[in-house]
Structures are given as structure tokens and as C-alpha cells.
Length: 254
Image 1 (cartoon, rainbow, N blue to C red):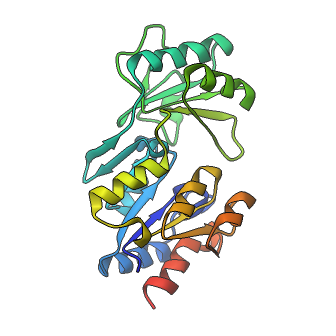
Image 2 (cartoon, rainbow, N blue to C red):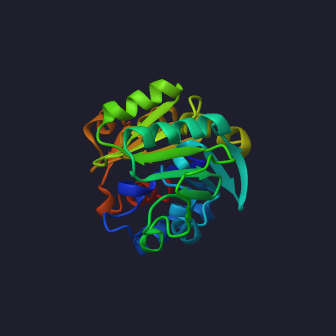
């Protein structure tokens, strides 16, 4: 029994051009009219996912790599670094790669040292910060452009935190040790009253593997990386072929 659809955004629900087709929106609306809840689970910061949140109006929003859950504009779950560890990570990144881009998320607020905030499709609402002074808040997530994964891993080991890598990017994220999509989904199940076995999850990348394997049904889009295809219970059409909506149409509306 499917009581909740939980889907990643990039390369999964979203087409390669970042759009969601009208056909997908129609299927999602039809499923929700039958009482099926909709949740997104994305590595994006909340402000980076905001335009899709406004379009989809999901019941729950897992963002910032599973460190935050919002529902009806309220935060119902948050995992964050201490203020001390937040500043240790920022200083460590700056020491290894002076001048590199660093973004720090605290709830819906994102600090960023980029000089091109206004031009960013995802982070145009970010707050400029050059990190010349310590931050006074604990971060849910810190992301930085680094030369390679080894450097990122050294920083993570130094702090004792979780490292997240992304498909085809040299952006690395540092997360609290006990955070991620697994912990967020457990919290979501408790908050919603929907058991995990009644959730179907869709994804494409490494950070979706745990989500797909823990939920009642884990579905990979055809364009997923091999590691995700290998663990999925099912494979649906690609993101450009509206694979998420196609699975929902066949399995929730038939």
C-alpha cells in the first residue's frame, strides 16, 4: 500500500533542463486527490528548492541533505553542528583553499561568499558573508568547492563529521555525523504517522541509496548511476521521460 511518495528532485523528478512536465504535475495531483502524501527529499538548500516547493506544494520538504524537514512553512526537524564545529569547518576549508566558495545553511538562511549571488538560479536569496568573522549560528550543512575528495575527507575526519559527494561535481558537503536522509525519513514517519513500509522512494544518486533501500519500495529512474540501479527494487523510465510520474500512474492510479 502506497501512502506516501518520496522523491528526489535533481535528475529524478526534474528533467535535465530543471523543469517538471505538466503531465507529471497532473499525475501527482491525481494521486494526492486519492490521499497519497507527497514529500521531496533533496540535497538542495531550502531556498534552492523553493520554486519547486511552491509549484508542487508537497506535504513535507526534506532539504539540505536530510538535515531539515519543513511542513506548511514550519520546521519540524533539524540536525545541526554546534557553533564551534561550524566555524572549525569553515576555517579548515579556508586554510586549505583560500578564496574558494563556501556556503553555510542555517535553517532557511544560507550564507555564501560568492560575489555572484544575484546571478545564481538556486541561491539568489543567499546572504553574503566573507567569513572574516566567526558565525554565530550552527550550520545544518556546509558546502565548499574543493580540489578533490581526499581533501574533503581530511576535513571531515578532522572534525568527525559526515562527508557528502555529488554526481559530477567538485562540491563537497559537510553534515552532522548523525544526519542524513535515513534519519530524516525516520523522523518523517514518526511525524506523519505513515510507516516506512508504506512509502515509495525515487532517486538517482549515491545519497539516495539509503532512502531507496529503507523504504517499502525503492525505485530508480533509468538515468540513475549504476550503484543506485543495482539496489533499487524497480527501475522506471528516465527523468526526461517522466519516470516518477509514469510509475505513479501505473501503480497508484490504475
